Image (cartoon, rainbow, N blue to C red):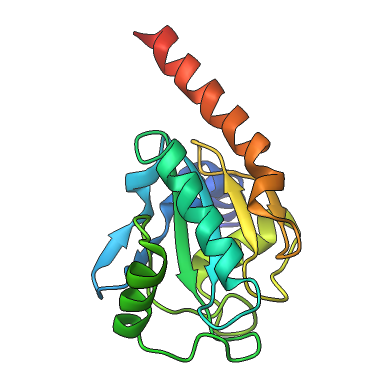
Length: 184
């Protein structure tokens, strides 16, 4: 290829690619169906790597479900991703996980299949979250706040409670509702 043409292609390549954000990924839900995260575009999301046998399980699941009940599903969703990488605290199958969280916590927020969130086999959506935030999960119940545009707003580890980050979430949801109201 001619050097001038190659240079032009390299120059234009970034503008030819669709800008990547969290909502550009596809994932498998807990029932095995491929889902485009684009269905959540335009709303605020809290993405969490969850585990059923962790010391943080009870408090986090209760708080996440309360958050979903209070703010979702029109402008906000918790998006749960089971992960067995930390302490092997999510050893069950997707079906067993689904039954457990529905029976124990009455979970109504979207849940996805069990994934890896770090390392070579990490799910692409979580690689994006890690790269965008500069924060990589090192235990269960990492929380990534995603804006309506699919960009990472902030991230918190498991020692930060859902109650502590709730003001950040409600402020984003409030801004989203006011923006939609102004557009009407």
